[in-house]
Length: 508
Image 1 (cartoon, rainbow, N blue to C red):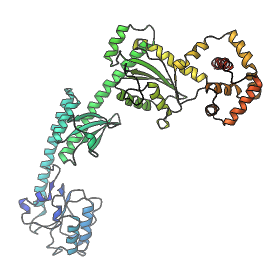
Image 2 (cartoon, rainbow, N blue to C red; image 1 turned 180 degrees about the vertical axis):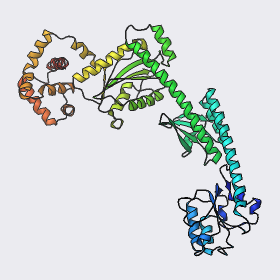
Image 3 (cartoon, rainbow, N blue to C red; image 1 turned 90 degrees about the horizontal axis):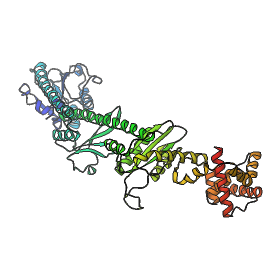
């Protein structure tokens, strides 16, 4: 049943129209009449409303009846429901061209006997329309009251979805922005087989957070009102979820701050509070720090981390401090990555994918990651991640990569072995090369360091320095001339590599 209007077919059953007849456009009898109006001028654009049944005596076009044909097409384009004419007084008969136009576009022409006053038509039609509008409002209020009561009583989003599905007599689902199902009714309904269900956006804090899907070809007016009420209630449910998640996130942040700042809580206290906040204390955790010249996009990092968390079935956490994002990444024990298998890959590989994907906007950032620790020792992983970043930055390693502390641990130990002994060794081995760089404003030291880091590969050295391979060969020849080294001697390579690392760590 249509609740915002009545079809022309229903209208013709009114007793006042018992003597009226539809003379053309019968295929449009199911057009919905929402208003009744009277035509006084032939210019209709700007004041005709969709669903109107226009009453006329054709007085305004009496001198040119051919205008009636154009009038039919205009009404159809504007979404009118029908044209009712009293032709007897001014037209005598309906022009054949108007009847052809009516049949062509499906806009019915209703011939009204001259003795029927317009008020006898408009009054019963408007009473019927207003009655149905009142019923629509009552039903909308019932739907809204039912759904809001379920929200206030905390019935749960599944119960709300079941109620909406029952009201619409169709499957209903709420999906997130990545089309993953939040809730569905029926719960086992296969939405992957539905290519184009009816859908509406759900907004929270002026952002689209979900879409409401309905497996139905179209809705009637009552159902459309129900959908609008349902969207509001779903938004309230999702907002409540968001408030709860934000509160939990803040509490997790406070908890992690305590884990990173002495005096540290006891292991028993850590386990108890972690379970309360949904952080599994049985998992091991790695801390990763992402940094750049500016702070990384919180929206991007949050989105990537949320997607990966769902895939892994874990609850990570992220904090933003100055120009850094600090990620606390849990790993389920016993699920190691194996190529081609279905287990999890290391977080390091996931982070590398984020930083190398230029479309995500993180390619100008670098990341350091600590070793796996339990929550009560997570401060160790955090400090290691920062040290890994610091060392990689001082050694001139570029952006767009991830540095594990385990790779830099020996450099960190080397950093603490400074003193006159290492300085004398550096001066003896590389003093001349440093002096040459200073006098000629060249990059021989840096070239030598990258050459050793790249295990003697000319191509990799050239790529890391963004220079041509021949330029690397030339510089290596100059290094041989200046230092007198055999660059292929493993012992010389080892000693020089240590000296270069020591120099760059101390210099920066």
